[in-house]
Image 1 (cartoon, rainbow, N blue to C red):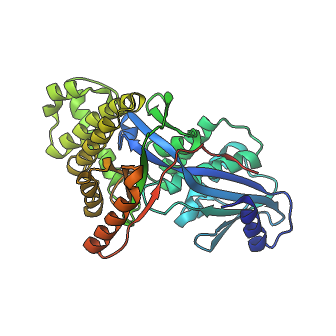
Image 2: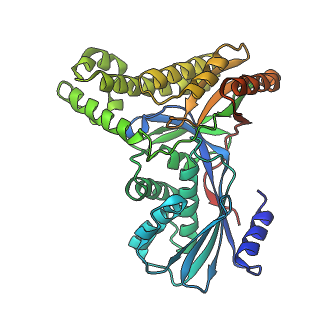
Image 3: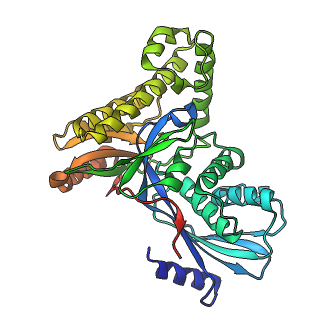
Length: 388
């Protein structure tokens, strides 16, 4: 949305005159490959999207934070000095989690603030709409408090908020991609050390398409935390033979040698996905650098099959989208993206054939499930920042 339109929406809702506004933006993200490796000390390959969350804010004289989510037409008012845990519910838990961290470190600000939230990401689609809200809030609070906190520290604060305040035991992938994204590049991030490199996102004559199943899922209410626990169990078993700090510290070769020490079949499968997925990220980075999009596409398909069969976080709708891609000669590769249990898949589609392919896929999906999926092309954008 244009900044002038956001400012007009803000002034209209809060019945304010012009002046004193701050506007920030934080993108959602697509993870090209490397799923459920982040909380296992491994590698991921995300890119920041051109879509995300905008916040417009200005100080008020009401001694309260007044949040307004324009997408929901819902407000939340939190008085200065009140217990921040009061805000730990519904959509406001995401900005409140960051406010909680700032209050604990710096106290309450001297004035209240009006804050309008507007997002153009589809919600609950696995594109990190919650992380974009958190990162936008972190950047805004950095402006409000005049703290000049480095972006990497804001990223870590957002992850702490998600873990401790929201209650999702996630890794740092989503927040890092939203905060540290680079225009026309994807990132290869080591989630253990936070070392990263940028890789040019050059798809030649292909376009990356996002395919939204419109099957919504909520991480805290899903089996996400269960998968985290299963990985920890697998690591404990492996440590009895070959001690390491993270599942992703094991190579596929080491896993083949000692993996059967894992006592339960289900946790063996979880570990197998994580360890081989970590290797796929390394291989995918090399494929991008060498412009081998055929190899990249094959790695994407392998990733999806592993997520569906070993990690069991796919669903019928996601599998249908990827299988349709697999049968097409104009698609180099496809996979689910995000934590799973619904949400989105991605595909590398030949530019010259993308309209016909997407039209055919949309029709087939509707005939199969009785409701429509949505589709849009993804571009790699910059990370969170102040716009105005």
